[in-house]
Image 1 (cartoon, rainbow, N blue to C red):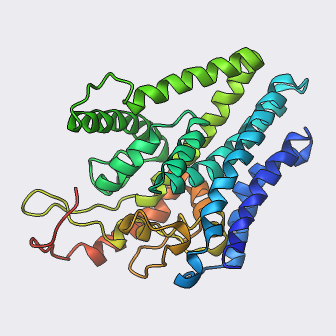
Image 2 (spheres, rainbow, N blue to C red; image 1 turned 90 degrees about the vertical axis):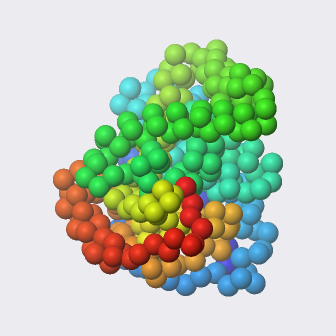
Length: 356
């Protein structure tokens, strides 16, 4: 029963399936869910500061929820690409379908991949690569785990938004910086193992080959329109991912210690949103401080932390605000200032181990 609320995620793939069956108003359902229904429902349903009891979060059903989504997404994505490529509908309907697919792979697929890539098992990490490969962003599996979690809230992290940085500028910096970071991280990993960078063991090269094969297969099967659909839904998904990155750490910084290293990651280095519905849909992603404190902790075990700075709305609502940079700065910059006033005067204990 503790896992049951997380099955609310099925409303997104169900909405996408319904949208792909028509060119009428129902085709707008995934967009309406993301930009209207979920933000309003978040406000109506309210907050949840309660944690799943430890005796419950060890149930195996929790681990299977993200796993069973993988074949579901693959099935819907393949069908959706074929629908876009073979339909006689006009391009306005096809573009809407592409956006719907991007909402599926971006809101749910990438989030499930994020959960799986933090697992220790080879199967789960492989499933994460499959989901990220669907949106042409496999390198995220490297950069997020080995890069972002180490450098979060520092200048060394391309996925941490600076104070005053607009979303659209952040997109360019984070996408390009994440790709470069993933390459350097993989090259460093191979160097530690005394293996050449250009080798079959380089995951970045493998990911590139997989992307080429994926696009070649779709191009041969569905032609140019299929390629446009695959690339288009990937773009929507990646921009949704990077928007979430933007709002998770905006303006928050870790200070340097006297020895040049950064202070340990603390709960106040991540923005949280304890809205009940958002966390059901996103596998408790908005309990982000606890995720950074213990990256291997499964989603169902993530705790609400009172010391974490809180966003005024759930992630869907904050996504809409972020799309309007002046509004974002009006909402968030004063909250960053309050964060600095509260946490800035703290001294760093030079004897405590630090990350970064």
